[in-house]
Every structure is written in structure tokens, then in C-alpha cells.
Image (cartoon, rainbow, N blue to C red; front, side, top):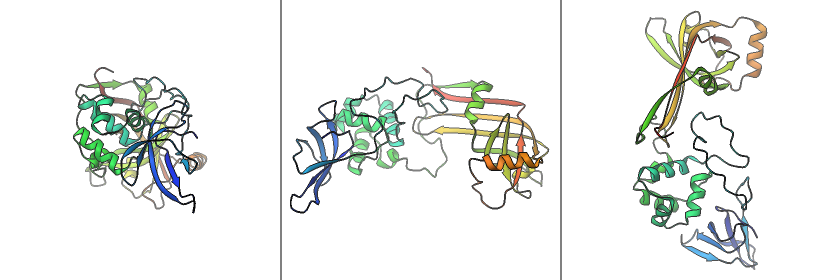
Length: 306
């Protein structure tokens, strides 16, 4: 029997084969994942040391690496918004809950061991929550929130419908200017950006659009009578950004240049066939608008020591 942190230990009834008790494995005592385990039982929320018998089995999560695989040394820049550094094979991005826990713990100057002690959990399990995508139980979140002096809603990302950037600023933020090459990398190939146009009545407007990158051009499709269509044959500004709420950092890229309607049928066909998404706004939006940046600038907020 081998297990990972976060797997479920299920004890079955010898008579019926039905589960009569289950719990989350929150502590391992051997690198190869063999028993015994520290198990937090779902019925009592208590953690006990368990030597599984013949009536027990492991319900595995979807893991990508073996338990015995060594934990890679963290890259200071790994996981930063817009980072293009390759991630080692088999290593997952942490989930948002884990990132919020780690950020709040760092803000309060607590070590992982101190936080785990306050939350009455194994430091290894806290490491698992912070470093891997996880869905901890409500009881676990309650203890973590209490240990960190915050709320369950905050750890879950409550207020996702609120404007971004309402969290705490970094203790020592640093605002960096980005070069054109990094700006192009952050634009990537597609996503949602905002185009600034003049409405038919002359008033300024900023409209979100689904966009693609086609060579050196930024392209989006819309309807001829829509507000974004007003970008055609004018000089426009196009902005893309990312706010990492959990880590209080982010970046923005601003492209400025002339916009025009794509009229070549073959180009229109190619853009339509290769588009990563259809416009979220729905409806008939077959008019492609191309922006060719003459200026590409960006900024990034990071910790001062990075």
C-alpha cells in the first residue's frame, strides 16, 4: 500500500464492503508512501496514527509524480505572473487557496512549522496545500484561517466579483518597466484585452474583447455596428494585464498603433480557423480588426528583493 499526502484512506465493512469510515492522509512517515499514516477522520476531524489493515484501501488523488520524487528547489522567479521559465516536469502550479495561505503566512512573518502548529496539522500537509493544487476540507480551512488571523472566505478568494487589487500591497513593492520582447511574451497568443476607442458621439470608451496575436499584429473580431468596430481606421490603445490577487503583484502591457479592418478573404478565413476562442459576447461577429503596434510598453509590480 502506497499513498500521497491528500489521498483518502477508506475503511470498509468486512460484511458489506461498504465504506464505514474514511479520512484524509495528512502525514507520511516513509518517503515511499508506505504505512503508517497520519489520518484526519472525516467523522471526528481528529488526526490519528493509522496502520491500515486488510479492510482498508487508498483512494488516490490525480497525482503526477511519485511520492518518492524529490521536491525540486524553488526557483525565485517560478510562478511569477507572466513568467516564461519552464517548470520542471511533474511539478504542478499551486492552487489559489495554497497561494493565499502562503502569502498570508509570509505577511505575518510565520514559518510553515509555526502555522502548522497553530492550525493543528502536519507541516508536510501544509507544504502540500501550499505547493500543489488542493481542495482542503472546511474544517482545515477554518483552522488555517484562525491560525493566520483571516477568514475562510478570504482564503477561498471571497469577493471574486469585486474589482481586483483590493488585497494588501506588498511590504516593499517595486515597479519595473518591461521591454518590448517581454511585452510580446506577455501578450502571448490570445486572451482578453481592452481596446480604447472613441464612440460615435465622440466620447471615450474602453471595451473588453477576445483577441489573438497574428505575427506582429493584435487582432480581434466584432460586429460592424459594435463599439469596438469604431477602432477601425483610427489610432488606438490596446491594454492587457494580469493581477495576481493572492500574491499582490501583477503586470500590464499597452500597445498603441493604427487599427484597420482585415479585408483579405484568405486572411479572414485563416484567422477564423485558427482562433483559440469564439467571442464571449456571442452573436454574429465576423469582422476582424487588426492593430499594428508602433509602441509597446509594460510594467510589472514585484517584491523589491526580486
